Length: 545
Image (tube, rainbow, N blue to C red; front, side, top):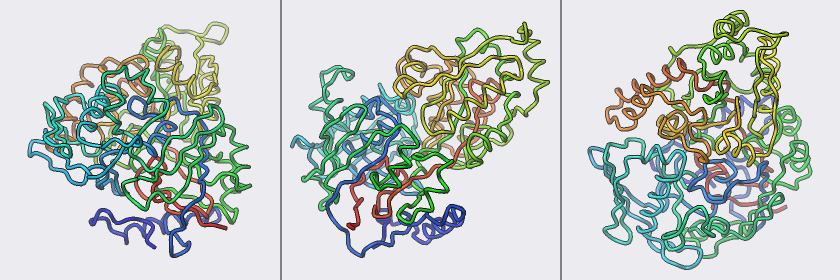
């Protein structure tokens, strides 16, 4: 059986084999564990039934991805609530709830023909009214949707199975933003006329997806059951998905060793354990399934802090950090140092001539002196560092930064908290100085706008403009790039935006670390598109013992 459904006839399976071979070589030092997801070697026929246990470190702050872009939320939401499209490993769109689409020549109007016979989990018919309501919600509430769909005019519904999305300006990136984890289609009949924030459907979500919400025991697990009326019969093949919340890395590694969990993504075991875990005969690694994200890590400066609002202080901090050493110490060398928020995944948009901040302690000291913050008893001032409570590299990086800042007279205090508390501290309470974050560009360069656009500074919206930078020149570049139909001109606008970000330093890009999924080899076809485990898992199945 070919593990990659060829839903897009332009997808080249030979290229897929080449990529798999290249990754196998890259992971040769890990015991050759890569393989089952990239090139399935299991039984010739799919085995139905069974319970897939997914390891997840952090509690999801929400179960529906309409207003929340966190990974834990997208992991859960995408199994229950679907999108109009999915994307292959080359980021080409594949039909899902939409079976066909047309784009106007000016890229202002997108017409979608919707799938017939789709039912919501409560038995109601899915249709264009649901699409219209959902896109309006995402445009209003989602941290990237508020940027990407800002010029939304209306969504017309000329028939129950036709939706026409109309923008006031060209929106060349729109078709790349319609996966279920980013633009989920929710039932209008449960949301219309209600306050989204208090809608009970957010706690017991209803979707069209292959799995139905069963229960959420906070701090312990979530249960999703098979949808027997799923439109893509005979999928799903699994009877149930159990998402276990295991925040401790040591406990997660032990669970994979013992076989009590089947799969986990976004580096579910510590880098320090990776070599040992990968050599186990029942364990495999997969590096596909992250193409749609474009992940990177960044140190965000809070412009409301009296020290950090001075550009010289931000520059000094940048010069105080040896990022190459940081990569080796905090991330075990598994990744790459970056200078812009657009990485190799969107190579043609990446600027290579941005301002960089070489490791230079003397220059950092002078900048702080010039800014009027001399040492007093060896200390200039104190800052807090809040690392994202995720993979061990974030905690390691925070300790590395603490030591680096101490060398230039800045006392740094590292604070740790759970995921929900981190989100509240940074995006709602605004009680942070330096936040070490894990962000995504997404499949289009317009994705970085949400992190730096002045109009996307809104308290309580996770992963929006955390630094609260207000820069008219940068705003203009983003606004032009988002609507520019000429590709060459669009590339140049985003390169200019990257140069401006590097000059103004609302954040210091640190590293893009390697991403992998760990799985028990009895799991098949869990990673079949660019969203990886943030896709539906409708085609995943378990090989019985």
